[in-house]
Length: 88
Image 1 (cartoon, one colour):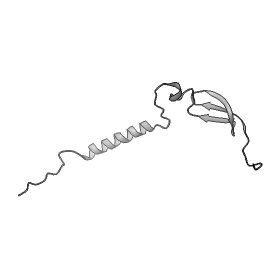
Image 2 (tube, one colour):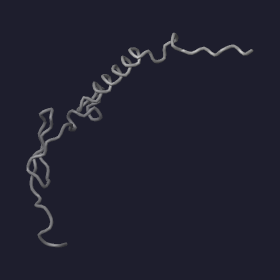
Image 3 (cartoon, one colour):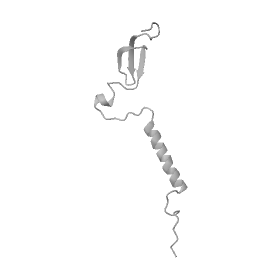
Image 4 (spheres, rainbow, N blue to C red):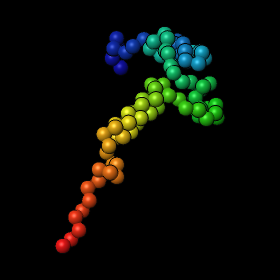
């Protein structure tokens, strides 16, 4: 193993967004995480939506905007559908 190329190994404190703290080892003294074993649905057995980036709300806004755009422009309405002339 080469000398002086590896990061220092130290005791690290992990802080979760739920407030849980525990110690481990790592290359940084403080590690901030969004989920841990105390709040993750897999470990707690509770069903809940974990939406950290607002992805569900963003999707719902896009869908509402798309449906409002279709109704405003009249796409898909029966009145604007062209009729096929009868065969002679």
